[in-house]
Length: 132
Image (cartoon, rainbow, N blue to C red):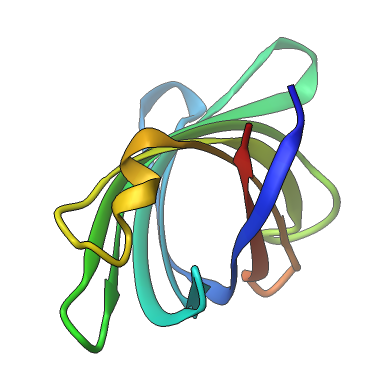
């Protein structure tokens, strides 16, 4: 298998963090960028679970919308690690999406892979590729 087309790049910020039982965290994120060349706004919520050995398992949901009314609803999961103080972390994962939009129709049949690096203040850069 190979990584295919580079389909999305977004910049965003951690907007909320809530501590749950057993050391889990619930994090909310807001971002904007381009998906398949279309300007989009993005909202995500994830549950982050500490794993043995220091890694962090992330699982969540998101919605991406364009100003023209196109949208994609998605589920994602990934694994990461803390890389410093504050929010500083690095994650890699996969995403499955659903969309009724003709602009985003190709995403219904695709799995994507992503990487995100978060700085101490909670700012991040998200990059997504189609997985062929």
